[in-house]
Amino acid sequence: MSQATATTAHFAPNDLEAYWMPFSGNRAFKKAPRMIVGAKDMHYMSSDGRKLIDGCAGLWCVNAGHSREPIVAAIQKQAADLDYSPPFQYGNPKAFQVATRVAALAPGDLDHVFFANSGSEAVDTALKIALAFHNANGAGSRQRLIGRVRGYHGVGFGGISVGGMVANRKTFGPGLPGVDHLPTTYNKEQHAFSRGEPEWGAHLADELENIVALHDASTIAAVIVEPMSGSAGVLPSPIGYLQKLRQICDKHGILLIFDEVITGFGRLGYAFAAERYGVIPDMICFAKGVTSGTVPMGGVIARKHIYDAFMKGPEHMVELFHGYTYSAHPLACAAALATLKVYEDEKLFENALRLEGAFGDAIHGLKGLPNVVDIRTIGIAAAIDLAPSADGAGKRGYAAMEEAFHRQDILVRVSGDTIVLCPPIMITKDQIGEIADKAARVIRAVA
Image (cartoon, rainbow, N blue to C red):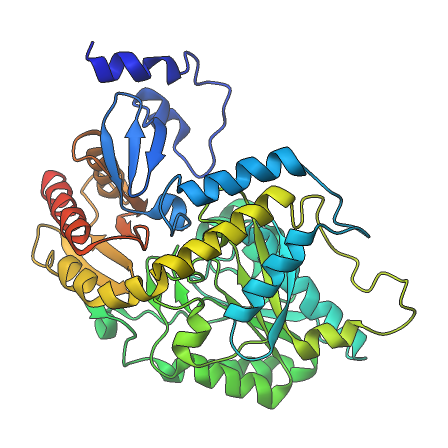
């Protein structure tokens, strides 16, 4: 046994059966576990002592890098000072500080922040706010929600209803009633090997007019889309698409919600993708990067007219019957404040924007490798579609993840036969090259 293995072996559990892992092939994992026992900056440490570069920012969330000292210190101090306080009818000072900081980063009059604990909760919160907003304005008939095919909005029943992922429909049924969907913006023939926002596809937003004609605007509460669909395989909105959605929603009195759980906090080079695209939605859902993945936190940023619609009636009465036991948890608030300061002090959003071209060059350099059928890049995010193997869909993608972890010392995210790369935005140009080189070795190994 090597010294590294001897040092870390005590971290390995001797029974893997009790833990039912999320979004995982439990049986395959338990035959060949991929155990992580430490992390620092751009790297993870495996249970056998290897250092692996993080090619997926944990799960799209560790934007500032791992175990950053200012964030760790803030969490430790907060745990000693105030471990928990109830968010219903009571407040802790850091909750108001975080809300002020997040609202300041958002464009336009997106000025009010409602806290949740995850992206899934943020989405369900935004959908409930949309329904309640129309009720508050005397338009209770507006109960229909519009999502998009291949959209991913978390795992709550609201999120899987407006989401457009086939597996959710097959497994959990139709979800909420009355939901409809826009078509996906991805067209392989038009978008193959694209960089940034595709030029083709703005017209797909016009399908919203057809949905309005079918259901009538008086029944539609909100449209929710991701500016860039991450979980579906890095599908950026076409040029002009989001602007068209905004115009159509304004025309018919429909709220527009951006799910920025992935795109928020620097992934596309800005605090929020809404700023990159020059479109102000009525609400933004956020999570993941707000604490760089250290403590769960999510939330919804709402425009002033949304908030004001609820501020009626007796002042002592609850205005919105919604919230979570751990909304604005003190540890999460401390983590968020420290994380936002790291982003600002180290200019990490600017770093992502500055290196977008180099990242795109490096990943598109993989074109021509065996079985690579498409590559898409935007910001510090990339998807590499591999042709399915003869053994069936998803086998080559799974083999790529195994190869990456066990032999090439890199963590990647896979979705079917798509390799997704979305490293922390503290990344350097040299590390971009390292990730691309390792990805190339992975792709050749599973050819």
